[in-house]
Image (cartoon, rainbow, N blue to C red; front, side):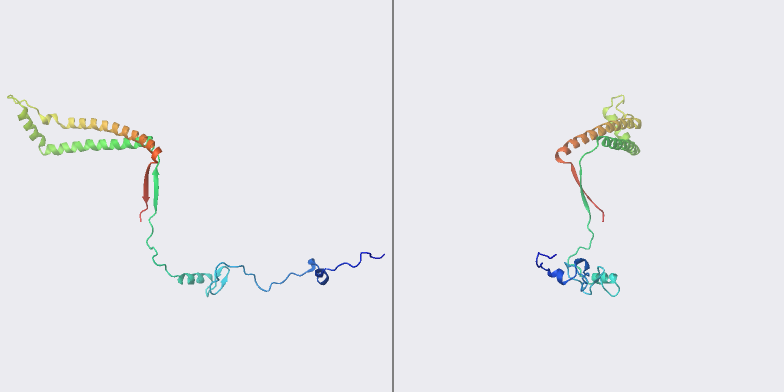
Length: 200
């Protein structure tokens, strides 16, 4: 049987060389170096670190030693600041705090009144002023107004205690009402802004 297709074209790659599976891998002439964005430091690199006489650590030390300080650099540490905003005040917490503070203020008022009365009594203020008022308001019988008996220590303490109780009630109520008013106003204007700074 004869082949009637005639002469077939020969491909140069297959005619002159081995098949693709029979080819040997090409040997690179040298190690592959990827492109670098920055120039290589003097002395070359080894494992990502500059080469030196004592390895990478000494190369880093030499690089830091060769740096020059920047002119005008700040040497003092900066003070950190935080800007905060008081958006809402809890009325219950405000009421508790104001109640305790008003009780402490009332106790201080009673103690201060007692100490002041003792000092004025030791200085003879009540006797002197009481005698003058008795002479000015007394009649022929001498039964004038007695200031010393009217401003006795028990009466002063009772009067001061009543004032302290009223102050506790009013201060607590006004502070609680003030917290409600502050929450309403903070909803419109955003509240009070505070700037907190860290101690040096």
